[in-house]
Structures are given as structure tokens and as C-alpha cells.
Length: 343
Ligand code: KG4
Ligand code: ZN
Image 1 (cartoon, rainbow, N blue to C red):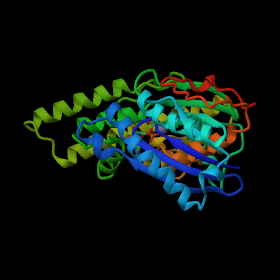
Image 2: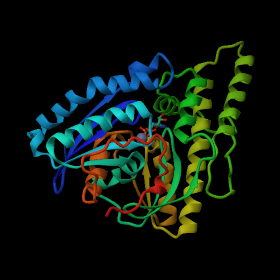
Image 3: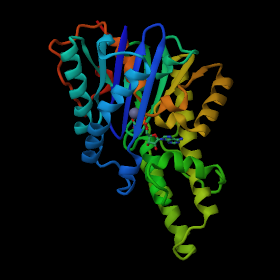
């Protein structure tokens, strides 16, 4: 079976072809960073327009690279949610139209299930059950994963997502959009102990909260600015970045430790954009070693949004009974634990 995967939930256009038994045959990613940078964040209307401009040529490119024609496809998977409604509808419209024209199923995929299963594209893949830490721009969740579509959210953020906190603090430090990777780079030269930022909800269950941490950073930055007559030097900015990153990493690590203990699970899967953070990977690897837990990550480019994870998750669900004629399903809000096993 060969399946085309289309990801357009936010500001990355991702397209890939997956073939059962062979894996990903080709993939393309087009980032909209340049378009949104001037606004300091994603502008939904511009995101949708750029998906429209990029998507069809990208589908042509992945098919060409896979040496396939449209008629060689057996299904088309697309991100149906959660995400920006206009952006989702672009991918959904193309997927449903292609599927209708070709007489094949269109498979609506939950974006976070895509992230969750991305590690299955690696040679060293986890068996079920496992604990998943989903850390992206819109989500921070601990999920007990018993099998495909059997997800129980056992902890989540009460306010900002971890990636959102990275992006907001990056803005406070005048770093260009998208802030997370820029902040991580700046943190490399800073002292993580220079500022004693809070570890929110420490020892208080499995939920997260990052908005108070963000406020603590803002107050520290304002106080340093006042001392420095308005301008923060590079060393201070690096110290703020490193101390903030340390607070997030320690919080995520402590919650994973507690979740592993309470569930008794021996495998941890880390997914979503913040999963690309090297400091977090180091800390979770150390935790895994101490606790005798195997930790799995997709390679960094499969942590952030991409078409390959949607093609793969679509393949996992392609056997279920799907609507004919194909429908365009777009759900800006869609809780992960609404999903059920395929069938
Ligand atoms: O999974 P993703 O690509 O998109 C969403 O589904 O949200 O995650 C994007 C988020 C952004 O907030 C971005 O700043 C953050 O992941 N991110 C990082 C790193 N790379 C991406 N945060 C910290 N360190 C990184 N290296
Ligand atoms: Zn994502």
C-alpha cells in the first residue's frame, strides 16, 4: 500500500509518500518562517494562502521523486485537526479531491497522533504500551498509550504549552520568530543557574503550568533592563535563556519521572517540536538511565511538523471504514483521547 500524507495544520506545508514495507519514499517540507517573521507569530490567513500556493507542486515533487504516478496511490492521508481552520481546509480539500478523483480513500489524521507515532518511522521503534510526552507549540501532554487509538491523557498543561512558553520568552529576549530553536541556541552559552526561575506545579500531580514561569522571566528581564538602562547585554540574555530552559526541562523531566512511576510503564516516547531540544533529550536520557526506562525520540526533523508522520499515521488507519465519497473533515479543536482504535 502506498499512501500520500499531507500536513497543513499550521505554518509548515509537509508532503510525503509512505509505502508499507519500505517506509518513506520521498518527503518535502516548506516552512513559512519568512512570511510570519515580520509579524512575530503565525498569521492564519497568510498560512492558508501559502499552503494553497505550495501544496500542489509539492505533491508533484514527491511523486516524481518516488517514481510514482497519482494512479499508483492507494490512499491520501491529511491532517484533519487540531490546527488553524483555514490551513486545515487547504490540506483537507486537496486530499479529498485527489481521493475522489482517484477512487481511493481519504484518511483524516489527528495531528497529535501523527506526532505520537512518528517514532515508529525509526528503525528502533517502541512496542506498546508506552508513556508519551507530547510537547509542541500547542500541546503539552502526558499520554498513556496502550495501543493505536487507545490514549489516556494523564497530565496536561493548564495554560501555555511548553513550545508556546519557549516562543513567548524568546520574544521577551527580542529573538526572531520562531523563538524555540533560537532560544535553545542562545541558552548554550548561558548559565542555567544564574536566575532561580520557578518549577511550576512541582510535586503537584501530572499537570503542567508555564504561564507563571513566563511572568517570572518577564519580571527578571524588566529588572535587568532597568539596571542596564534599557539594553540587555548578550551574556544576560544568554543567562535568562539558559535559566528558563533549565526550568522547563526540569519540570518536564520531573513530571515524566512521576508519570513513569505511577503508571509502571518502562518505555517513554517523546514527540512534538520541543522534543528536538537537545537539553531536554539529555535530561530525559539521564532519567531513563537512572530509572531503567527506554527513551525513544524521532529524529529532530520528524519531531517538528512534517508530512511523513501524517502519511504513516494515515497508513495505520487506512484499513478502517472510511466515508465514500471522501469528506473534508477539519476540526480546529479535537481532543486526542476522542480517538478510538481503527476498525
Ligand atoms: O510540533 P511543532 O513543530 O508544531 C506544533 O504542532 O505546534 O512544534 C513547534 C514548537 C514551537 O513552539 C517551537 O518553538 C518549538 O516547537 N521548538 C523548540 C525547538 N524546536 C522547536 N523548542 C525548544 N527547543 C527546540 N530545539
Ligand atoms: Zn505539530
